[in-house]
Image (cartoon, rainbow, N blue to C red; front, side, top):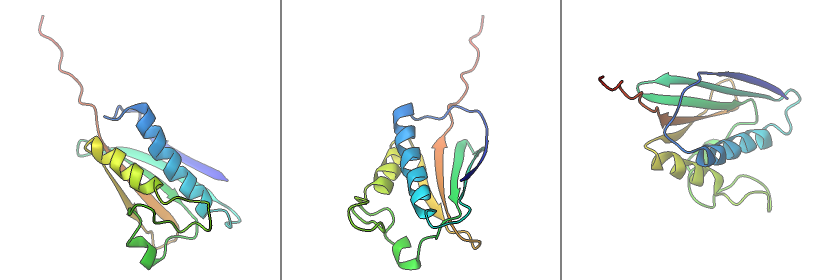
Amino acid sequence: MQLHREFADVQVQIDQTRLEQILVNLIGNALDAMQAQPLPQLWLEGEPHDGKYRLRVRDNGHGIDAEARKHLFEPFFTTKPGEQGLGLGLTLSASLAAATGGHLGVEHPASGGTTFVLSLPLVSPTPAEPI
């Protein structure tokens, strides 16, 4: 698998454990989607935008069909076969993002694959104390 990384070094308003939970879910889903891909590629790209940090997790997997797109963030909805998924990862991730004032969305590039966009508030720099 080829990993592409490009992101700014910033502080976001979410604790490390919650951020890790979100990223484990998004990256795990991307890896699952790329299992049949002969040349799997994963992109992690982030940038500050309008007081938020937008982190994009993009894969070149099979993509998500139109019917499944309607239900992605519903509890217990999964496209994984059998016992492989509970259908809670995206629901939990979206809730964790929302609890910090952020948002989790999805894009479906025309070129294929799927892109999840995690938007989190930036930590505002505190002004210097007057002396």
